Image 1 (cartoon, rainbow, N blue to C red):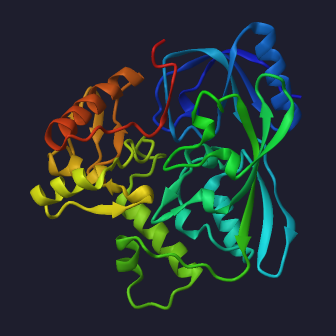
Image 2 (image 1 turned 30 degrees about the vertical axis):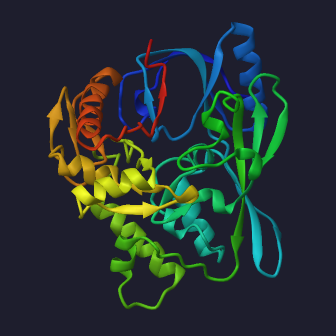
Length: 340
């Protein structure tokens, strides 16, 4: 059974390596541990916050809550048909290792999402996506514990209300759900998706195979994105903004080279990285934080101790983009207790 600890440093549990202390902390290796954390939080009158790999969060210096660190492991085949398999993966499993596991077992579809840092339990929260593919396409259901009642439940794909880098779990109406495992429906036959320009270029004239896509995605990410274990970061710091066709056309008339992509509801997705790069922010440094030389969408923590130092540079970048392109950037990682 998991042990509750108090005044615990989270510096080594977030990939930005920011200083942060949790009032209470528990490590959960089972559903029962998660239910116990719900009980302990109630007993102490604290809110309950789940933490996975810490690769998509910005932590405030003092978190007056009970942090439950999701370490539930396990990968299993649940069912299969002629065309598909259904697998369950524990929330604490490493995402990239799970992508490799699925591929090696002949369960296809996740190859475009290789090398995304973080845990499996965090994948539905952010509806992680890369190179033209989003994880929602493969999620059949999410297994949860109610953070208020402690009861176990399951949410269907539709009930998760997935959107672009969004889901029910990010909203007030769904923040009480604690994800314990995720069920995926994957294909038995090769699935190849190469709609994204960089991926098309990398594949070239090679015969399309899941292995080829997997290797190309890994190569692209290693080339373009700094490794969080060497340079503390959370990957993409800002979401790619989605605007109306009219706004997109105006921007295209002014900047013909600006990348634009059609999305649902006839709206247009813009490249936040391109705008930040165009405005000269790549390599800029302030308060111990740097815009990565490898990718303008990544902020690297060079020497900052606290989240507030990170936000200083982020705000200046956002203001610059808003002033020049009339587009409001939105921070992608989840901000926790930044007002503390």
